[in-house]
Amino acid sequence: MVLAFSGPELVAQEDERLVGSWRGGLEVGGGASLAIVFNIIQDADGAFTGTMDSPDQGAVGIPLTSVTIEGSSVTVSIQVIQGTYTGTLSD
Image (cartoon, helix red, strand yellow):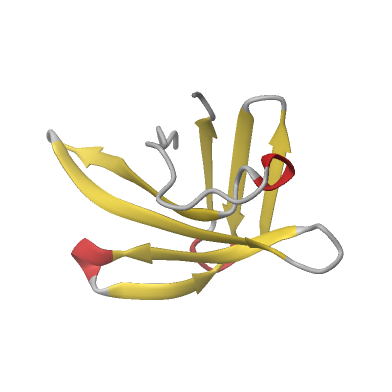
């Protein structure tokens, strides 16, 4: 599944460009879309972590398994729903 991230609501320092809440839509077929929100933080060791919300489904605080960034590509994995979402950072 591919998720096109919109801009962040909150951006910290340059090296923490993922930190904040990221909103996007997940196409579920038949032209329908679900809102998805990734809440990403950076821990003391510099690793990214956070939670996912699916407001349309009433789901909040689903823990992220991993958050990786390579260049402008961001991949978020969520083991409990067996989902992987990829987005692209842009200015």
